[in-house]
Image 1 (cartoon, helix red, strand yellow):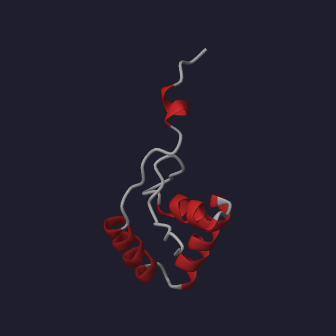
Image 2: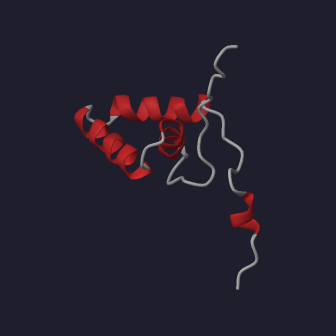
Image 3: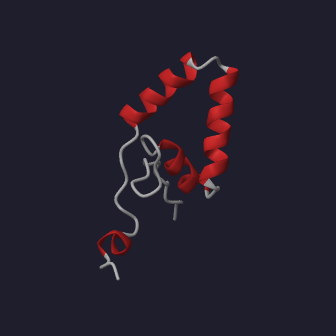
Length: 78
């Protein structure tokens, strides 16, 4: 009947700091590098303070997602 709503999660597999940019990239199906570059540019344009506050709020309110590919992490190394 209705469309299922997708949820935004912080990435557990593609993270540099908190996984927010990786989670946004997974949600929008974009390259995470593009999202990170846009985040850096936004931080520079806003003189860091508003961006850092927004990022910290996102870190607190966006839940961490489940590991999307547990086989990769648990696979034996050869």
